[in-house]
Length: 86
Image: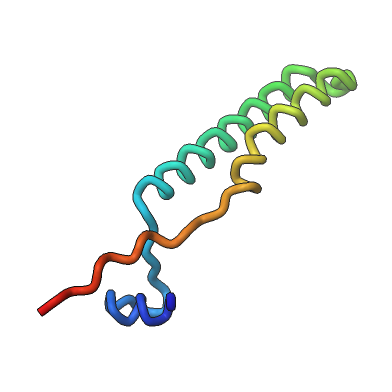
């Protein structure tokens, strides 16, 4: 089905179709994760050479919370447009 759809849309093997809303949501989740990584790096630097277990746990929990939406994301194919009638 997807190969037929790609032929219909004249897509090459390296191209795909994705709904704008899914792409936007993916970008949003990637931005949140990037911010969490920046925060974790900053927090580790602020904690010095020996962060406490509590500090490490908070950092890991924040990173996990930011990463889980990406881990759990499932991309779906956009809806098939109605067939053209002549």
